[in-house]
Image 1: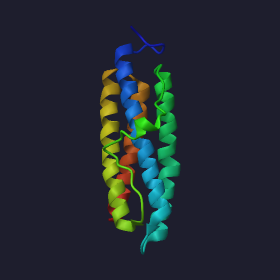
Image 2: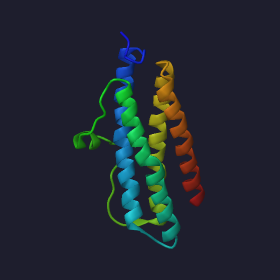
Image 3: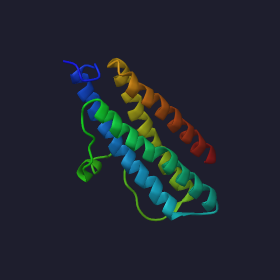
Amino acid sequence: MKTKIGLDAEKSEMLAKDLNQLIVYLHIFYMKVKVFQWNITGKKYFEVQLKFDKAYTDSIINKIDEVAERILVLGYFPDYSFSGYMKGEEVEAISGEARGSAAVREILESSEVILGIERKLLDLATACKDAGTAALMVEYIKNQEKYTWMFSAYL
């Protein structure tokens, strides 16, 4: 059985499920970066605060929308329940004051999880012959690697 865009329906369903998992982690990651941006302290306050601001406005929020749209293209619905977001165990929510280097380390740890999910999705999309999702993941991996490099250089 094929989807409306000509992909294997069973594989597309698996892909949509994993894309929904990515949405969960992106939302948690978005909130983590936002909380750090609000609560950052330390000697390099201004530069870290601006970099976090750029990360969430330029990258994360757009990814969430694009992934949700891709799920719809595949013929499924994006998960929008908060209970689903609470299951994002690998990227944990945070609260409180964020010191510069500690906040950056926390962002890097979450970034590694996101990269792993994106790489898994790239492999699955390639196996499903889903060029649209594969292209998204290639772009996301490239951007996530760049932020990882930049935040690592800061440390």
